[in-house]
Length: 201
Image 1 (spheres, rainbow, N blue to C red):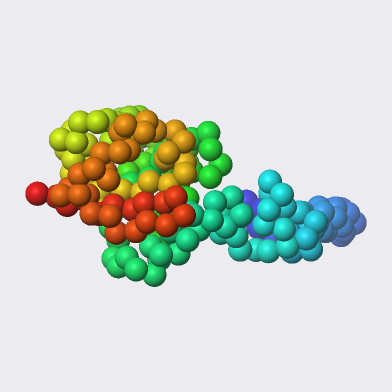
Image 2: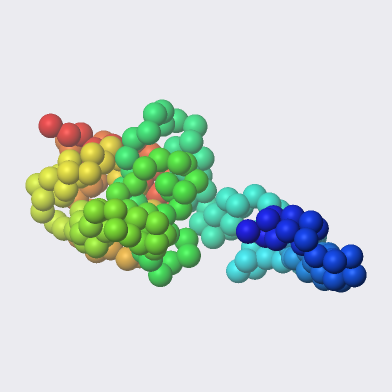
């Protein structure tokens, strides 16, 4: 509609009115260009940062190394070692700005991806609340049979246990992964992060 408005004014409005209209349009367009230029200069100039980190860089993953070196190393390992698109289970903590960090920076699918899912998948027929509850149950339950049933339901290939998972889920539930090597093979362990490969029947 804006493009047609420019065309319409150029073809149908008197010379004086057209000049005033285009002058006003030029001012508005120039005003709109201030934000992208100022934001870019601010972001790369070292004056803008988030939570005191990522200063002077456009690397969106840089903050992970500052917040949790264990996550940073594990994500790097996943990107280098895992092939294809296996499903990896990780914490779904809507209130945490650092949640869903594994799938975000590896591109691997996960069971539920945080608050953004409710925005983009609303009305899709997927029960997001149920997925959230199932993730919580997988991590929290001490019933390994139930955990395996849910893992199979979502075709989960790997279970990620890092600092965030240890913070929000029950330790008794998390312990089942290490104590059942016949079902969960420990494929990575470093800096407080463990990754288990799920052995489905």
